[in-house]
Length: 225
Length: 225
Image (cartoon, rainbow over all chains, first blue to last red; front, side, top):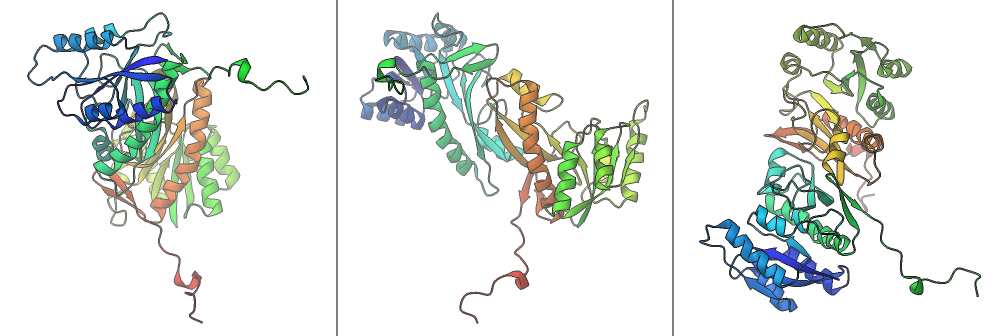
């Protein structure tokens, strides 16, 4: 079971999906620490309600990004976090942070910071992705779980889901349809990481089949008794 | 019923889907002329087999692109073509050609050249889109029917379909999965154009609901007889 750190700036609905996934056993892990850069963020309330350790490290007024990132990384390391999940975290995480959560001997080349983005990357990176999709006249958009690298939404892709763009969509209605898929694929991708099923091959993330159930739990072959 | 011109350079499977769609009444149109820039292209054989007018205008050795495009546009105009469909046409169509098939009073702002591209635009424009999708590690790709403008695969999007990228995919297996969706959505988008259901609103293509069936074909309301 892995220990998960979550960084969130907003209402925390993806955090909630992760908390729920852990509670229900759909994620082989537990939320060891929720950090927010925004005092009063809904994510902190959700962490409290779920009994998950949480802390606000206000970013307002900070100018030294590297020092801020270092403070976060130290908190996460103290909580012995194996994987950091960005969930509506509205700051860029810098190279020092990414080095602190780079690949380890057991992660098959995978770094240890995940994000979810409301578009089918590489389409519509950056801010306001649903608005970008509408402006481009896309008929299909979706969401992407990806490892975080130093670019903006450029890291290796772990999972994607597509949603239709409807003629009558507003930015809000499209974002809501995409968000529902984020809540579905993000916990699943985190569970893949937790169970050691992910490996990085160049830019491609491979997902290994699930490990077979333990022999003790399997039915005996027919005709053996 | 509209008259459709098809430009094709290759084997012509999308042409075949259009021919089949017209024959089956799924497209309210007929293929009035198939032009290929490649002598012996499979598309010409398919046109012949379907009894559709067809002609090779070899591009090999031509250096004046505008003059070549003009020759094509004249052939298409002589065949009284309402809509030009690119179907595996491996040349860029230039601004003069696009002006010749610009919007008319009856097309609600829509230009009259369509293309199908093997990716979910704006992702992976240009050549070898399935190869690009694999190299980027995308988990979902697809295809796009779009109006053609002067950019490379940048015109307004009419229809899209998504397909999964599988871990074991090669460029060929992914391209084949995408192609099957092209054969499904391209005839449908052409039919929308043929029935006047498309309109262009900025960069967004709107698809109006189908016209109601003629009253004579409808069942009378319950209790009226």
